Amino acid sequence: MELDMTCKLERPDPQALFNRYLNLFSSTVLGGASIIPESNEWYAASVNYAIAEQLYAVAEQAWKERDPREACCENLQELAAANGVYPRPAVFAQGYVKLTGTANTPLPSPLQFAIGLQNFITASVTTQPSEIGANGTVVIRVRALVAGPAGNTPGATGSMTTVVAGVSATVQVCGGSFCNGAVAEECEAFRARYLRRLQYNPRATNTWIIDKILEWPCATRALQRAGSCCRCADNLPADCENCGCKDCGGKMEFYVMFDNSFPCGIAPPGVVAEIQQWLFGSPQGYGLGQVEIGICGRVFAVNPLPIDLYIDIADCISTTQRTAIQNQIREFFSTISPSILLSSRSIETIIAGIVGADKNFSSRFELVDPLDAVNTSLSSCDLEPNCDFLPCVRNIYINQTGSGEGVCL
Image (cartoon, rainbow, N blue to C red; front, side, top):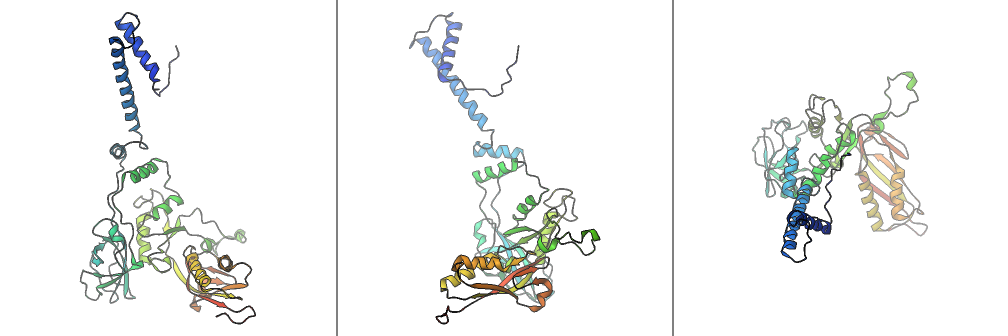
């Protein structure tokens, strides 16, 4: 006899289930006699049918409650807890403050601050800078003492309540805001995160590492190191003479940008070093950071390359168009990557989209500091920064002349 290997128990049609209990009552109680509708026997069989329907309904609900996609919140938490996953509690806001004082002044740890209506403390005792920098400033990562979103917007300045001789009590909030403060994770957000956790997601990939970097407080972009950093080294064999740019895709080398916290999105080297240790651990390869055992890599600090942008338009444009050009170009610069060729054609495409392609215009880059010429290759049309340098636009100059009717006013 062939065995039925069906694992899913189908719920019978209601009429078929009712007929099953009528026939069962008839055969076991009445010796096969027919049951008259609305009789006592008919109602007795109906009760059995109703109990069976109830049991089927309970069984279906119980089965659904073992599925994290459909389980109620209480059962979802029990399912996830069995796999070591729990709802996130309220999150403390974090951000960066800039201290000023006498160079090389020692800093105790932890430091406490009052900014707006919130109190903050050094986010990490182990990675807090131990002294004021040689330039008389230092940037420190701090976190709110009370969890929740209220700490995300403390104010532009505050005071350090820990008294340190040689250090100003007034501190500046980098970017004027903090990040990541949030209420406790609600049910549906937890369900979505747990379902993503159940999906297979290899951790030894650049994509996974980029997503992980973006979990760092106030990080806005995580980028793979590329462009001018990927060229052949000077000491490669002769057979690589014409190999051109090497592929950096297989290397776990990254940049992290803070567009809302630091000028040009460039974090101080100390912040980058803290992320490096958090991500890859020290020593690397032992699984002491966020990545798995055997994974090594590096987060590189970015150097600013200040430039001015000159735009010549041989026609008149409106004040609205002028403002739109400046705003869109600055927004464009907030999306570019370090070490990547920057073409004036990209700028002119933005201008054409605002004033029209029929207008006669051109653009060019100029270095704010001529000594930065060693950090880039600059032509009339393109700017290619050296490895780990990022063009940062300081000023946008728009020069416009009339179209034979006089000078634009």
